[in-house]
Length: 394
Image 1 (spheres, rainbow, N blue to C red):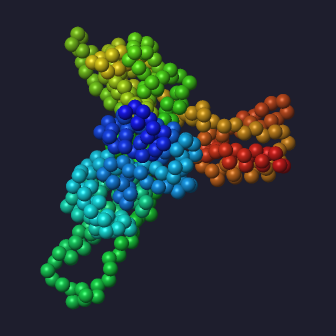
Image 2 (tube, rainbow, N blue to C red; image 1 turned 90 degrees about the vertical axis):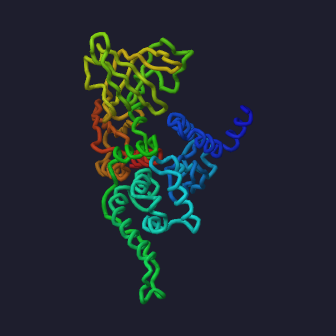
Image 3 (cartoon, one colour; image 1 turned 180 degrees about the horizontal axis):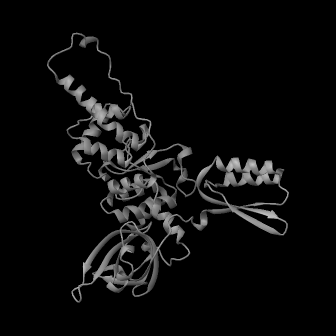
């Protein structure tokens, strides 16, 4: 079996990872690990979509422009689409209703979807869950869709009642086809942190982005392990330093003197692990041990009921606004560089917004004057080459 699965993963990586995630769909930790493996292989994992998703994870074709830049499977032309059953509040009857309606052809719009599905099975709560999970992203941002849902749904209900009415319009034989155009409000998307929270609540994981990744990268020089690297044989009773976000907190009072202690769950970009914060440490900074707090935790690896946990010795908050070291870039401007060249470079950088911090080092005599730009940039290899060419050509 090991040889068979190794062969399939080597020669059919997208299909293998799709099957693996479908089997492990009920275990969020294992799905998270599988998504990380997909990234290494160069396989995109996409949110659910009402026109492409099936019940389980499924393989879809994607254009070359949408492929990941690295990984041995990046040129397969395939990606993995989340299944509808992975979305909280979307049950089997709703999924059947969606797939049955889709047999007559893809949905043309959000309005067309609500007009065609059985709204007793795909009720308002189901529709909201589909929006928040990204299943309608092809037609608008999630804030627009949430705002428009009540109006479009009410119209769909009126149309349905009209169809079921025994009274026929005088002009029914020449009635025009339904207008399936979406009339969405002109409003911006939800803030990224709110959008990600919706994904976490509905899918159990972050898909659009993973804020924990950035937090771990900020603390990369201070940690000894990621959670999935801990092994009961190798690391038991060892001191380790981890970074992540507290995803769960349970406070209890000790029997000995009724003092408070905390059982917390720490989540990094690979896995979660339970941690124990004893009363003395908890009493020092009780407000520190709260959900969504980014932390560096140092402690001893323990084994409780065949499950690893950390006995915490110290906890330090992470400045989530800090820029990870690997996202800080410096541009050297030599003495005598014309102002117009620097102006062009400034305009070029501003045209490429992103997450990278840019430090400008300007040569002035024997000294360097360093300036951190007040905006952040997508400093990819193409932009780096363009800036270097500007500085070289003048």
